Length: 470
Image (cartoon, rainbow, N blue to C red; front, top):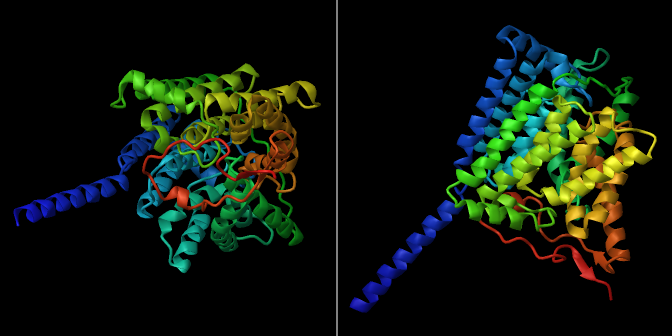
């Protein structure tokens, strides 16, 4: 019958449209790869502009053969050129891992790239990350689950790569084979541990994997010490590069803002309106800004946050070097997943306040890093209000100075570990006393958030992990 044939054609057309829509959703941000490779190229070019090829090769050898406990500034150890080339190599490896694992690209992808490129200026190198990555690959392989679901966690777990370097290069009982074995174990256990720690922090600590890595380091370091070794903290801190890195970061951040406003295939007014809506969110994890608002507002947010972070370091008389530039790049990465100007500034202010009232000052290297990495607690500021953000930063500024000693600098995400401790204490206290609510474990699975790229709406306040007290 004609009517039935037309209906069948219409159904086929609808199913075809649905298929294309579904296919486009799972390839929504695939073109991100080309921009990530451009970023890698720019890092490499910047490195070769700052130093000669001979010095860069010599510096890369120095980086690989150096024990990388926090704080080991590759700019001081090997020069700015070698440090940036190492960052380019680590970032390239990360992109290849994401591509080969068929990871779904979304805001977390930008977080991972920011972390990997930033921390490869002070602790991660293109050799010591491999055992942990291999362990992260074995976990889903043995469980017969998609590897892409765990690629992000495996990459972030390389925060413990100093453990691999220390055991591999130690002159006592350590050796490269044992270092690789320990790295495999770390990479293998990190996915289930990160899934659990995510729940107990209720989305208030953005550096969740850093908290999980801190727990592992608390076990690893005593074991290493009990076997006769003595890992210690390091303080390799470069100075005199403010102008060099200031120009590079300034150009990069300005370019990101202009790209978001004028070159994102979106009217300027719409891009700016999207950014203003982004500023109204709490940043509570999971907050995938790329899926919520699109690329234009995220580009603007990334550039603005980078400028704020750089201005803070210069304002307190700090140094732009491997660790601080790495921290700024981390903030820029998390600009796609929870951080914005309104929720990071109060937490930063809390650390600055601590510098005025406590025995330590803002001229301390670790405190300068805390001024930047404290933004892991940005959700507390965005969710509960700026006074609580100041309180969180104030507490974090002291806690972070003492959490690095028990793990002997083996966890590069030390601020994530201390931020997790502060979040676990503050969150239930605030909601019980000020809001008369009680926390419940999140129902959302940690890894499910990393497997989608379709647009989502910003969550309503208090709809996650809380219920009103009877």
